Amino acid sequence: MDRTSRIYVAGHRGLVGGAILRRLEREGFSNLITRSHAELDLTRQADVERFFEEERPEYVFLAAAKVGGILANATYPADFIRDNLQIQTNVIDAAYRFGVRKLLFLGSSCMYPKHAPQPMKEEHLLTGPLEPTNEPYAVAKIAGIVMVRSYRRQYGFSGISLMPTNLYGPGDNFDLQTSHVLPALIRKFHEAKLAGAPAVTVWGTGTPRREFLHVDDLADAALFLMERYDEEEIVNVGVGEDVSIAELAEIVRDVVGYEGEIVYDTSKPDGTPRKLLDVSRLHALGWRARIGLREGIEQTYRRYCEHAG
Ligand code: GFB
Image 1: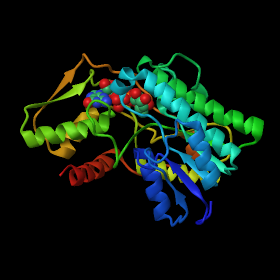
Image 2: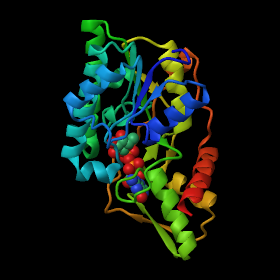
Image 3: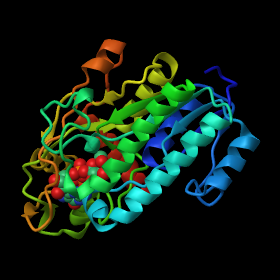
Image 4: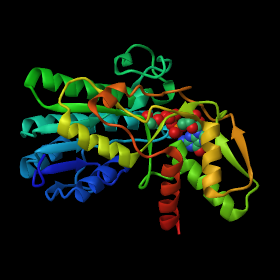
C-alpha cells in the first residue's frame, strides 16, 4: 500500500475497524473509503457490488461483522450466522470481482475447538467440536477463512486471514447484555463506584481464562501483515498470555478504584474454559504486541470516563 492507495475499511465504526481507520489516518493514508451501515448494508449483495464497482478500492480491511459477547451469541444465533455469512461472502466476492489487490479478513479465537490444546496453534482449526455458546458465529467465521483460501487457490486472489484473540479498547461496546467481559466489567465497576453499590456481579465462576489484546495492537498487526504477509495460512494475533476472569475483575476493580465486593452469578455461562493463542508464527514474522493488560485497561477506562460523562 502507498499513501494514495484506495483503501476500504469495512466496519470503520466498530472496535476493530475504528482502530484500523485511526491508524491508517495517523500513518498519512489519504485515500480512505468508509461507509456507515446506514449508507451501505453489507448483507445486500447488489448494493455491495454497486459500491465496489463505483469506488474500486485497491485494498480492503474486512472488519465489519455481527459481534457480541457470550450472552448475545447464545441469544441471537440466527442473526450471528446469517449476518456474518452474508457480510463476508458479499465483500470477499465483490473484492475479487472488482479487482481489489489485497483483502484482509478477521476471524476470531472462538473458532478453535472448545478443548483445543493450549496454547492453540493455527493447525488446531477444525480438529474438534466448537464451544456451543458461539458455534453459529464460529461456523460463519470458519466459512470466511475457507472462502478466502478458496479464492486464493481458484482465482489467485490475494486474501489473508488473521485470527485475533479477545479484543478490547476505545470504541468498544459497553452494553451490559451484548458486550464482551472487559468492557462490561469496566462499566459495572464504574457505575457501582458512582452509586456506592456494595457489590459487583461477575458472570460465571471466574475460573475461565482469557487472553486480551488491545485493539490498537491489533490494528498495528493488521497493517504489518497487509504489507508483509501474503500466504494462505491463517495467522494468530495475540499477546501470548492469559488471565482468569477473577484476576481480570480484580485488575478492573483496582483501575476503577471500586472498594466493594465481587460476587459471582454462576447461573450465567462460563463458555470456553480457555482460549490462549500460540503466537509463534506471528512472532517469527517479526511482530509482537506492545500494550500490557493493565496499561490497556487504564487507557480504556480513561477514554470511557471521557465519554460516559
Ligand atoms: O467476553 P465474553 O462475553 O466472551 O465472556 P467469550 C468471557 C468470560 O467472561 C465468560 C465471563 O466466562 C463470561 O461468563 N463474564 C463475567 C462476563 N462477567 C461478564 C459480563 O459481565 N459480561 C460478559 N460478556 N462476560 C466470545 C464469543 O466468547 O469471544 C464471541 O462469544 C467472540 O463470539 C469473542 O468470539 C471474542 O470470550 O466467552
